[in-house]
Length: 284
Image 1 (cartoon, rainbow, N blue to C red):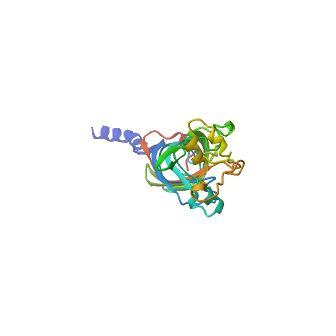
Image 2 (tube, rainbow, N blue to C red):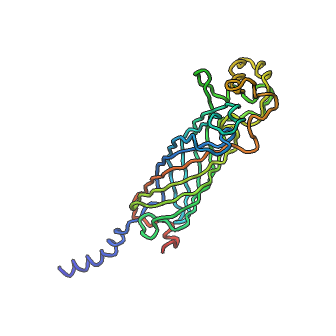
Image 3 (cartoon, helix red, strand yellow):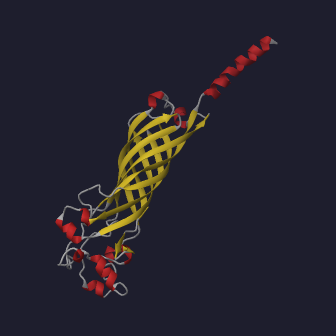
C-alpha cells in the first residue's frame, strides 16, 4: 500500500509543478490621472500657466514583451487667456476660451527593454508611444457673467459668407510621446507617460485666421450684439478696435495641440495558461 502511495505521489508531481507556475493574462486594465496643457493661437509661446487635471481609463494588450496595443479614453479641460501672454498684440487682442475635452484613442507602445510582470529581470522599461484618436471639444467664453459657446456665434465670419472657416465639435488627434513602466508587484504595473496631441483642427480655441470686420456681424440675424462683441474684445482694454477687416486674428499655419502627462496604474489577472508570446518563443 505504501508503495502505491509513493508511486501515485511521484506521478502527480509534474502536474502539481505545472499548476504552481503562475502566469498573467496578456490583457491589463488600468486608470490614469495627471494634467493637460493647450498650445495654439493664444498660447503661442508654449506656456504652462493653465494646466488642468486629466482622468482616464485604458485597456492594454501585450502582443509580446516589447510591443503593446492600448485603447483608452480621457477627459480634461483646456483653457487660455491673452491676459497671460507677454506679447503686446496678444494682450490687446484680449481673447480667451475654455473647452472640455473628451478623447478616445488607439495607441502603440514600443518598449526599449523586455517587460513582463512577475519576472524580476523584466521589471522596468522606458517606451515610445504613438497613436490615432478622436476628441470632442466645444470652446466657450464669458461675457458680462454669461457663458457663450463660441461655435454658435461664428466669430471669424462663419455665418457671414466665410463658410470655409466653419468647424465641427469633433476632430482627430495623433498622440506622440514617451513613458516608463515598472511592475510594483506581480500583476500590478505603474507607469508615467507624456504625450503631445497633434490635431487636425485650429479651432480648439475658436481662433485661426483673420478678422472679417464689424459690418459682417451687424447683418447676422439674431447675433448682432453678442457675436460682434465676442469677435473683437480689444475694446475692453484699448480705445482703438483691433479687429479691422483682414487683420490677422490667429495663425492658421499650424493646428492647435494639447499635451497630456499622466501616472498610470494597471492590473493583470492571474492565469494558469501560458501566454501566447511565451509559446511563440519569447522566453529568456
